[in-house]
Image 1 (spheres, rainbow, N blue to C red):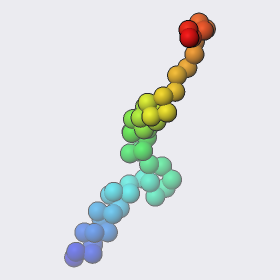
Image 2 (cartoon, rainbow, N blue to C red):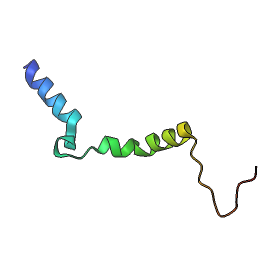
Image 3 (cartoon, one colour):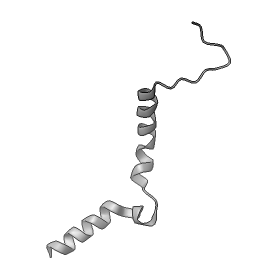
Image 4 (spheres, helix red, strand yellow):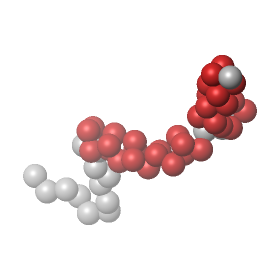
Length: 52
């Protein structure tokens, strides 16, 4: 009985990730990208040159 519960929980956690798609990763992609941008301090220069 416990094995079946564990198997079901694992299947639920993996969801469609087993087929090559991970909706959870898509949901948090924006967060990961914004953290990466802030960490690397990436700035995109516009048409006006930066002063300094």
